Length: 449
Image (tube, rainbow, N blue to C red; front, side, top):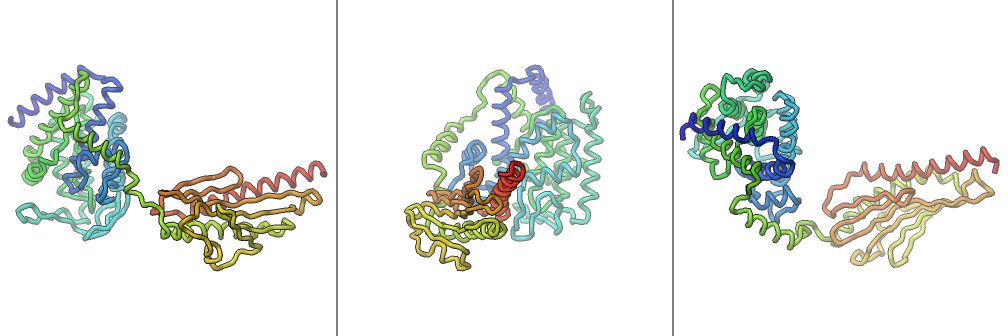
């Protein structure tokens, strides 16, 4: 079909769908899940993401990762998925596309900074170096230089919002059909290429946001159409978006028919969904723990150095502030087998804390500070203790602070630990102990006992 015929069919199907709205909550959820899974898989795959369709589904729905796949692929998939979830709210609130919104969406897609073979990529930040790509025929395509990005992107945003300003959207009166507006915007956005990475995914998200704001279903460009998609992009421009518009109209028509089927209570599953579910079941049976490192002597030793010592020394630092308030104070390190080391002052040499312990059998390591005979309450005796325990499990370790509310946190052995969070937990524990001491002194002063 030619573009006018495709658009005519699309508008007819859209009118049919409008008569079926609103969809029930169950129908809407099923439709959104299906569209989001397809969109995540195809849009990221076009850009080189290695996750298969069933790996995408397993990760998005259940957080299950596949062995041997780059973790960056999962970060990108997660960011893309969270961005798609945000789109419905943007449509409901009738949010206009702005420079800030574009930067916020880019931040969501890329999640965190990374370095590729050319430059440092900063989410939500414009490119600082020129970017380009080579076509399959070897032709080099250069995008706008960094210094022109802000001006040209804002010109494009102003053009867009003049086309779909709110009164026109509500009355469905357009200078251009939404399909043409979406296609033209995407083409020019790609020509500008404002960011170091993520431009293709973001252009398709913004293009579909335009369609959704105008009441149409998103156009999901499929992986098998990648070559056609790139060809249509190269043949299109802001002034002549017809080649890309034909592909967008065709794909929006497919998702509109999918939405009608969902609204009518029909199945919207694809023929290969059974294979996807079987692959997901296989991953569940095998267990996701295969991708999580199991404890080893090396892991235990790393946790002792990176976690146990910093927390212990922070307790020691806080303990020093309380020493002169008690007649007796001492520290103790103990393991499950009852072996204990007692200290009046903590040694500086780390080997003295666990040098004699067998790391292959250690289940936990406990550090406690005992504070006895609180001077302000004498002759009445008051004894307190504080400290923490490290528990070592097969695939994780656990930190538990004893006083007063047994603060707990769990971590994987290969997880990066934030020392500031660790020490803040120590301070929280000690602070609540000091608050209790203040209350005891205040009560004594009031009662004279």
